[in-house]
Amino acid sequence: MAVVEAYAELARRVLAGPARLGRTRLVAVDGPSGAGKSRFAAQLADALTGPLGGRPPVVHTDDLLDGWDDQVTFWPRLDEGVLGPLRNGEPGAYRRYSWVRRCFLPRPVPVPVAPVLVVEGVSAARAVVRPELTLAVFVTAPASLRLARAVARDGPEILPELRRWHDGERAHFAVDETAVHADLVVDGAPTLPYDADRYYVRLR
Image (tube, rainbow, N blue to C red):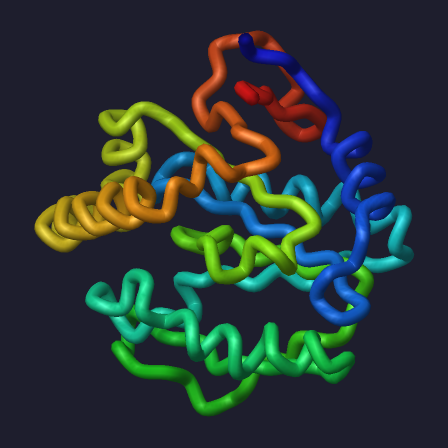
């Protein structure tokens, strides 16, 4: 059953939850490409801004990938640069990958020690990090719509790589059972009338 819920209420739930990554509450927004993960992560970060007195850092896993072939193997880069330091109460950093230049940019992106960190992207809520998550979110949408969204965003020339990417993420989610273990499953293509800036549609 689909239920409309407020980002503000979810923000309160996150802040009331335990910090399991050092002093930081780690929120993972996972799901297949084109489902609406980035929008959900941004709206939740906005909802957390007021209570925190500042916007929490948001890390997009696409920024840590070394190209299309690094779909799930990027994790040590995230753990060593960001999660590991935060685990020890220290700030982290990572270098952002340029999909245009096809290389990592030299300037590091700092990730401060904060009450909340949002990590968004495919495999963000993978099994290895579940014990440290305050909240695991899985955003879903029909495959045909997700494909259309991705092509509209990045152009039809990415179709061969995108189809291979979709095969890879399906395989990962099947083995990892990500949706089954998520605390919250979100409809990324709801038909219910609602204000998308303030609310989301929960499936489970």
